[in-house]
Length: 142
Figure 1 (cartoon, one colour):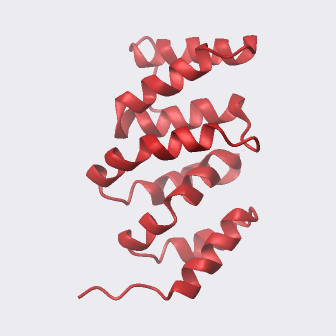
Figure 2 (cartoon, helix red, strand yellow):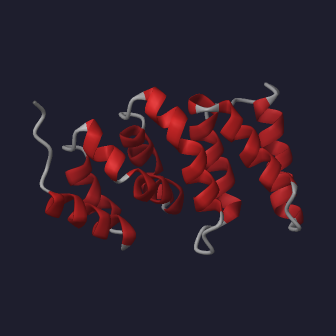
């Protein structure tokens, strides 16, 4: 039987992530079990695209989650995240793409399509760059 952290601890981590206290949150997140990471997946995903200083650390924590679970859950989370008005799409598209391309390529193509359909010429260019990376014309690892 696996003993999980208390719901209160998960609430504290959620609060820290939602309030962009990523350094503090990471100290606890690194100690969480995979099942606990699943409980805060959406918050982790948002944090992983929100603050460039913690992108790699947060991505590493996300990738501790079972690949099959990530494959099954990342699409809905990405779709929801891209609708969030607090998300800076110029940075979000490439960061989400870098994560999704190795987890669920279908989600990576969704991200590309969303960027290319934008009314913003800069986001269209981001989409074209991501498409080139996806097609193997550039490094895909992000």
